[in-house]
Image 1: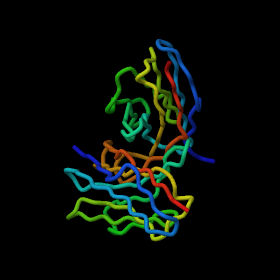
Image 2: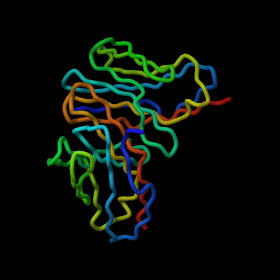
Image 3: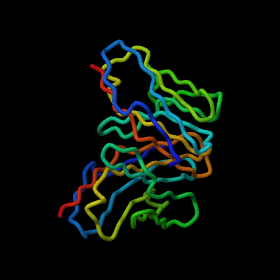
Image 4: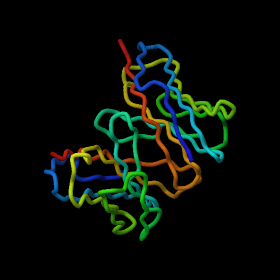
Length: 112
Length: 114
């Protein structure tokens, strides 16, 4: 069975500061990993995904994530936060089949 | 724009009423999904359809039924709505399972059951 943990239901950063959103997973098989972003009153949009190629994955809007097998982590980072980054972020893991499990989400606030 | 279209966007039901949430995708995707989103619980899978003509239960199927009408359309029906079904419902699709394909999501249906 797979599971996803996102440490911190709410993270606040100042504009221009580093964004770090944490995701840890458990999976019995080599996983595919995803980050999605949800803006208010919208559906989820794919930010980036790891599918066993490069361990450092670059996504849209300047985000990137690094797959670390030894730590079972897939943390999301962005060097400099922008006000428009305020949203909810979901990490998800897939066992390469039909099963796709989402984490509980982390709400990112960006302070001026 | 290509994508996943959900209707309606908002709905208020009385306990015991029924309704159908509609979902259509125009990306020729094989797999379609219905999720519900509740605060602090992320997204939970209600039902999915791996291909036209097949449907399977997800994590929280009780109180719901689905129909994969054709490759494009996947509807979710609440036969007798309950307050516990107040939630935001998302339809999603993807090319196929496996191979690292992510989902494309609709914009959601906000359902309130009073």
